[in-house]
Image 1 (spheres, rainbow, N blue to C red):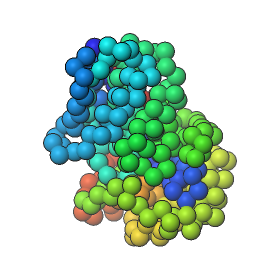
Image 2: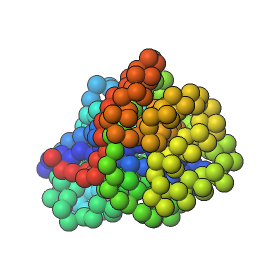
Image 3: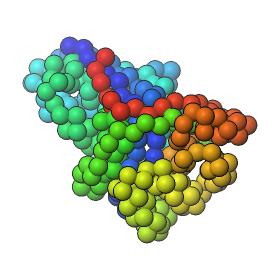
Image 4: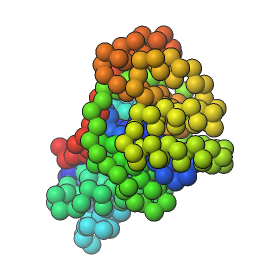
Length: 285
């Protein structure tokens, strides 16, 4: 039995580390998973072009999806992911990989069209917690990737508070460094909870661009990232933020507005690329 699915990356509106409430939006860069199921009794994972990558997350996604929707004869298999999304860059690569793997497993089992997308998303969230790759459970990031558009969530209750389509061009700057979400100093983030609550209020009021800018300055301070990329973007972009726990920054607006930001960010080490938001979320392929 074989299944294949893809899920988009995402950028941050509100980092959930401070209060448990988070918000993210899907962007057009994908991770694709291929899952083959069998009765071998063993399960293996592989990340394309990353032979040393930790595959516990995607393997756990397969295990949970099979346990929930499979049968006793399905005892093993293989999962392989390939991605346009850089790992440990703040662009929700883990959430995209989890969503793609869960959906590909459901596709292999023949039930992808029967399982509600939010329910499938929560399997990946649980797998992320089991694998130790997230502090909050990342339901905000995962829901944006799985459902598309922009979402606001209560990660402590795994509750979707809001979701709507969004139409932005998106500029991403990813420096050469990497930052793993599980290594973030959550105690420092909790100190800025009053600011995070303000950001949540802005997001729930539909002021996503304003929300992400306030979030960016607050979390740059909490996580010890320079705010210079945000200052460079603000005369032009509608909103800009550190994405996740970094090190990437994302700016949103129209393509014309973001050209000037790209000119500045392209002078920095790393990779600068222009994309768009995605409203269709994860899908079988």
